[in-house]
Length: 312
Image 1 (tube, helix red, strand yellow):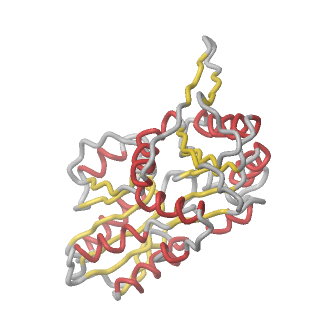
Image 2: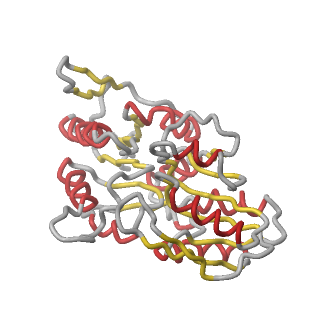
């Protein structure tokens, strides 16, 4: 009988906080690795134990700076050259995913480039969560396990016990996600239509639907500058909403986003720990994705179906 290849977990430097929780949920510990840094800023990750013949899970979100992506690429290359049996890149937050198409002339499709780099480096499989656009899965020439934070958020929203719950999509692109949430929570939804003339700045926003007397929950894949949700929340409260909450998988929170949220009409922002942050705001609630990733890793390792872990 063929013996199953041993499993090992390793983490990139900036995602170690999450990798430790995933390994603990799985019932193991992280493998030993280190990063050598040179005086000019160059770095070299290395495995400090054998990975020969192992199924290696490399956990690293690729949020800015791009060092995080490059560290993951080098770890994949190192594992391949060290004769790992299979290499699975666990990327809770996949950076550059907003660049999934040419939205204007003479620009790169960054998400496709990242997919090509990961594939060329030698990855056997990708595991990620709430991609900015579902079609990015097709950019990869290896299997992609696309997890949804809805399996964490939906029970949380349900437990809030809001009598007049209404789900909101922050833009037209988020209607599919919002519709799925409203279906599982058996409530109505509204859509925000935004006019954006340049990146990270929303010029105008309107609400399609009636939010008067409702407790609104805006669902999104990420919060970057928070411009969209802040404008939407203000408009909803002016339109008679009882309260506005936001659930968002990836808390980028660039610039003064957290400060603006603190001063806003939003009563609560619920995020996951795919991206590291030290929150001082009392409005932020963090739910961990560790147990979900550990469960899916176990199913993938044991060749079991993972569809039962999905809500949306």
